[in-house]
Image (cartoon, rainbow, N blue to C red; front, side):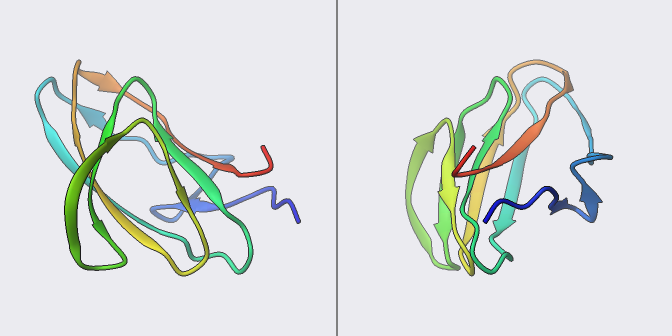
Length: 96
């Protein structure tokens, strides 16, 4: 099943949530797979993410350029901003 919409911080993919960031800024992203059956590939333009927590507990940090999140799963990722600006956080269904 392919869904045409999702929410990030209460905003849909038709009117995405954005945030201005500064060089060197460190962010924590907390991503929850709140869907019933869809898996998403999550990525942030031009940045790697360091996974620090999976389903609550801390894990040995792993650097990734994207991660797959399924129903009921949760990930915390740390991102260090390389250059000031605005970047898109993508959540694409596994099917594409």
